Image (cartoon, rainbow, N blue to C red; front, top):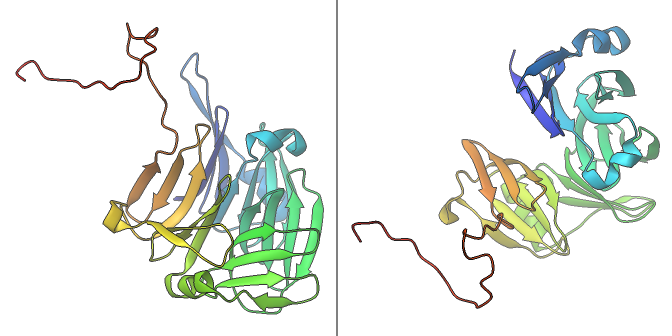
Length: 272
């Protein structure tokens, strides 16, 4: 069976794929690994399933809200959560078209609704859908308003009563390039596209193209992006994995710890 989605937290790697879900644990002291197969109990509670194509873990600042739950996953048949021991809780019956992370938890798209859950599994809102598009990113602007990035239909905004196309330069660009993922930064958002690399926006109307194959990105097809604890972004692409070094760890050479004056240094080989 092939793996389709992974997410890590502490010394655990949650993995989902073709008809299976499990946890790979790692003991840093003994360097031993253990595989916990969660598939039988998931099937007993929710029935058989196919590909598990989305796996999420709560960010560090929201793990207290998540309580015992450690990972949330989605397949076409249902969505649910696992704790660190591999115990399973079903959240939503399908068919599920897609799932994406929002600032307070996970959003699931079914045929007629966008379901927003918080990290504890509580249903926050249920918004009707009136158009046939596939959600790839979601932002909750307030209690009733949503902004959706679709796979090939641009940007859509829900004002509490109806959906409206969010026309603008970014909307037009994303209709041409397609959208695969969204990653929030401190003061802007990064959007991974199907054929246009990574673009940046501050208002979802204007944009800048930041990274493409012309700037040494492995591919213009960006499948996923995740920010690590240091602030760097790991980018999953068709053809490889790249790292955007926003905050690469700084190291001070031995012997220069007390040096206060600014300057630069360089290394030379023995032969010059």
